[in-house]
Length: 503
Image (cartoon, rainbow, N blue to C red):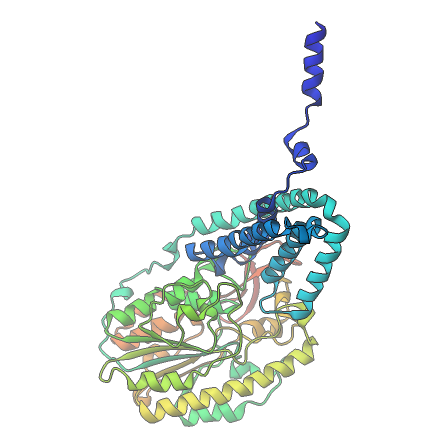
């Protein structure tokens, strides 16, 4: 009886795995490396999944965040065993663990070098190592707990991606098999965040842009007053435009990102595929590789960027590249073949994204107006060259959304507002079209929003007005989660009226 009690007591007193790990004197460099790198991986994937949703990215992060630290930790640990480093040995793994953990989090949060921040991380790591070297295993446990939390946060994002379907792009007619009877070269030039002329001289913009407006009229462009985007960001707006269908953010929660949007825009979509079916050589030109961030397969025949130009970690919003030179080069190539160009100009742009970066309402307005003048200059240069060398071209100048002027920062979009000028500041977009033979076709007389632009263009190219029988609604949609139940709301209806209607 006593033996049984003693065995039970002994079993109760046996330490658990966690307790044994914490009490162990065994040094574990590989586990320390994994602990430092695992949470940053899950953190980055959770917050940037649409940018890195490929097997190549998974392999890159596994190597750079886990394998490389494991090699460094192991080698450093072995070297620290040398007698000459005996006094420093106990600090090596704690320093490497804290430094790697903080440095990788910095990489996840801020693209670029940030020298001051790196110095701060080094100093903090030295202090932690000196004061807390005895508690390394506890720190590793905390890191693994964070990793588990990060994994749990990542799972819904991955499930959303797995459940994504492109059913929303299915067309109600046979427009994807349309045969063009006219084949002019088609140029879609997109100045980011360029507000419609009908809004520029009033509201929060209050700016006289009549010189550029007159320049377009002089070059036989048709301006479309009160034209709007249907969505509030480049990705959400363009994916609907090139699909000629609404996606309503695919039930997402971020207005700026959209599920699979880069693949839709760059790899395959109804508009791009249709131009290719009709024998067009397709071109993608951009000042910045923003649309290539997740390294999608490039479905265009030619581009001024390759996937090798795109870093695995970054924003794709670095210094702008010249697009006029590659435009001139591409225009000289493939003589006799029709060409389609999608050109991205990152001006005027929109106001800053975050409150911390905001210059205030008036400061952001001034920055946007500077961007407007830059956009006008680039547009003039592109249009002058196209008109001189391709006078019968179909040239579409279409912005992707508004400039958000009137807000302090773009993420204020999540707050419900009934301010008409704010709402139009978000969605008002410039549309100007130079139609071949300088005559506006019937199909091009009443274009209200971006989602229906290419139906009008294809109707013109095919001389078939039946494609106009399946236009999408011209509503503009936003995601709200402040001052209103979270969800997708229609802000502007078909007729341009302000409505706040939850879908």
